[in-house]
Image (cartoon, rainbow, N blue to C red; front, side, top):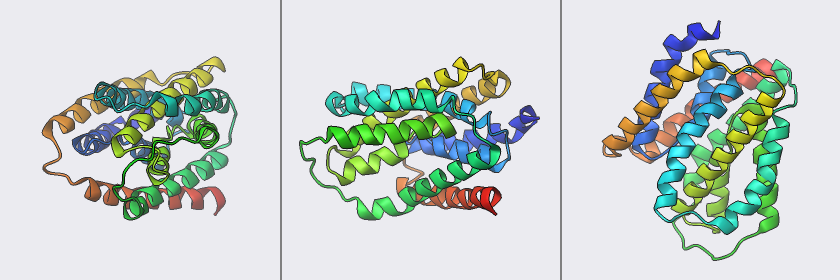
Length: 251
């Protein structure tokens, strides 16, 4: 029974939230990877992940919004396609093997993003440009991914915004957290519409854990954890989980 896994999930999520919170990150992919690694029901993982995303991304989005880093003209074309994509994708029934394959592929991309992108993306000035078509296409793909697997999409959006120089790092973080917030809400709505039961027994203790540990990590600050180190460690762990899922799905 999934509830029996709480004794493992609570301390694991507490560590993830604290470490990620200390360097200003969310940790959504790490939550999904942990639940998938433990073999949780593939219909439950997205529900829990999307719900926790609302807490993590909501807190981050509020912080960046108050800091004046949110760019509405870039956000509009993203959510125009991502919200409906997440809503309808969440209603698509998928087998366990297909879910493992999709999630394994997305986690593999996430691992590459964590390990490789810092080597490619350098600090450079933003170009005051936007590409509505590209942003809408990204929103469509990331929204569908969120609805199907529970990964909000921010981990993919941020580096693309930086590589294209459409935003600064803080603006990319603001847009990513906003996208995760919208995708998660839409994905949850889509699953609730088709009658998927909400796993309150799992969500409530994990929500408290993520909220408290994340805030403690943010309060502690980044003096004990370097962002590059956190990304490298998590990147390798996510890579291993992605390989395990892909082997299970297609091996």
